[in-house]
Picture 1 (cartoon, rainbow, N blue to C red):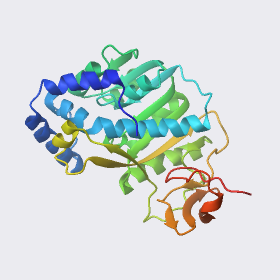
Picture 2 (picture 1 turned 30 degrees about the horizontal axis):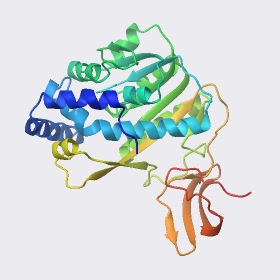
Picture 3 (picture 1 turned 90 degrees about the vertical axis):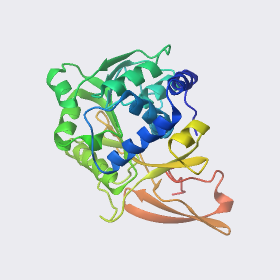
Picture 4 (picture 1 turned 45 degrees about the horizontal axis):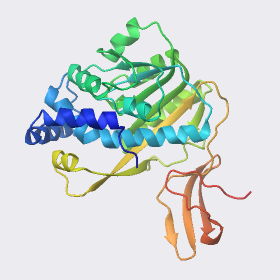
Length: 313
């Protein structure tokens, strides 16, 4: 579990103190209902944006930190001079970059005026300098003349109608890596498969999490992962939650445009099954889905759901 950087926590605490918690809870409930019903509004209120930041940023931030951690395992020496954050929301990805203490040339695209306002306030006094563009993504593509080393779409891709066109435009302007994070649902996984198909057609490499070139899962199944994080008092109240923690389920994929090999192997895609004296792991491999049964005696550090399983040849 990763805590938000101190500057983000301080800025978020200040924003929450300026609003009534009961209003924030009502605002978030309406946002949640709209999202589930696929009612994507052109604009939301400032109170909505603050409520969203309080309710969703901890989970989104932890998901991003997980994905960046998996990427770092694969490409520890990777460096990006420029980053494009599409559908930047209230700035969870920005907070992750602050935590990593890296400050690339950072461009954030967010069509909501109030989401942009909140994210600007949340990065105040931080070392990360962000170029904000309050535009619809298609408007941005029409006027953009720049290329970016890395492009991120975090919980935003589902809002786009012409997904294949969006992916095609992203492919044109991204020089190194594309990161896509989606909810851990069948619909979210279908979006992941779209970009995986793009990667295959463009002869790009899937850095993580996939090990198989073509997804071996049945159409009724989907690949997703989970992070657990605690809820503080405000977080719990605004979400009207009963538990002191939450499990965020998500799908993700990282595409490399300048690598030709798939770097993942034996990715654990289900929660490991614990038995007396051994554990059972369902994994994605280059040869399809495989199940491994491994004695506890030979496991130094017990692998978790989402890890790569190291096995002897």
